[in-house]
Length: 71
Image (tube, rainbow, N blue to C red; front, side, top):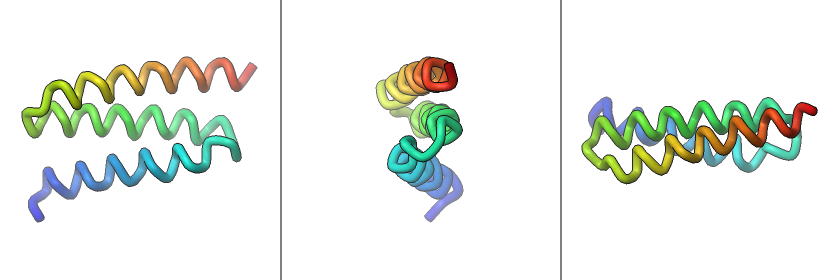
């Protein structure tokens, strides 16, 4: 397993864990947004720009959800 694959595995695992824990705290929603940003970086680095683009959008959506939940 090379470093890029390990990075992608970490990003996707973090997304899964944070998504599963979102009901526990709004901070998990923010962590999910950060993990989506990491997934986006991974997608662009590996050359899968559609994946990178969709993950970037999910990151923005999650930040908006975090802001709403904190109110």
